Amino acid sequence: MDNRDVILRTLKETAIDSERQSFLGFASFLSELGPHPFLPGLMGVVSLRTPLITVMEELVHRDLLGFLWRCRQDTGVESPCDITEKRIFTMGGQVASALEYLHGQSCIHGNVGARSVLVGRDLTAKLWGLGPTYCKKTQAGTPGELQNIAMRKWQAPEVLARRPVSQSSDVWSFGILLHEIVTLGDPPFPKVTASDLLQYLQRGKTQKRPANCSNSLFSIIKSCGEFAPHERPALAEVIQKLKSGEKSANNRTVLRVPEPLDIEKYLREAGYGEAYNYIVL
Image (tube, rainbow, N blue to C red; front, side):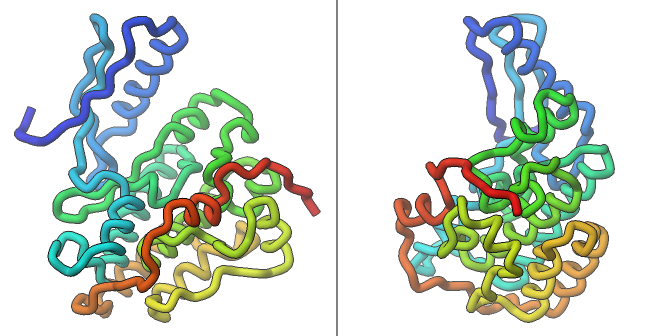
């Protein structure tokens, strides 16, 4: 094993058989996915004795949402928190590449968002949060059961209407992710409650353009947010546009957001704790 930091994920020794099977099944799933530069690496598995352990690559800045919040509070002293327009295109391209790879493996992520992206020392972004992907791949649950209630504001309208997740719904969520990055961690649709979001989208409403967002970046966000799934671009097209935008993007001006972080406000505007109570029109 090379000289990399790792995270050990351990299953408690009191786990029941179904928990052990799920633990090892997920490790097997990660192994079968194979390596990809923008997916965290599975370094090893201890499976023949207890406790069962998976050894995963560690990314020092942890989840992207927390990293963006630290950038929002940054005083300018710590250069790792310098998010420029060019960096958004770069990180977006990395996540889109990983998502396209998953789709090529007949996997739907179903959980795309800043919380599901990990950030390395060199600000490389790697897509994580693959639990729903594993469940979908193994058919361990119905589409309704696979929906993450805490992520409703990241879900495409057809998923909010209780239809199955798809590659197109992942593209919708990817557009929300880009919006999170350019706003340094704002929640999507902050003025709309999660319970009203489906009706809001059915009326043709969309997210407003963030103040820091360039025309080329907002064009990608808008295309990912088309209401009809068939009108959203394929990831190959998204990746091409991100690479094109990266070439001319501003790499000097560091993004700043004037509003301080308010965790309680974020949780409220992100839709945590709301009952699932949609009316499908």
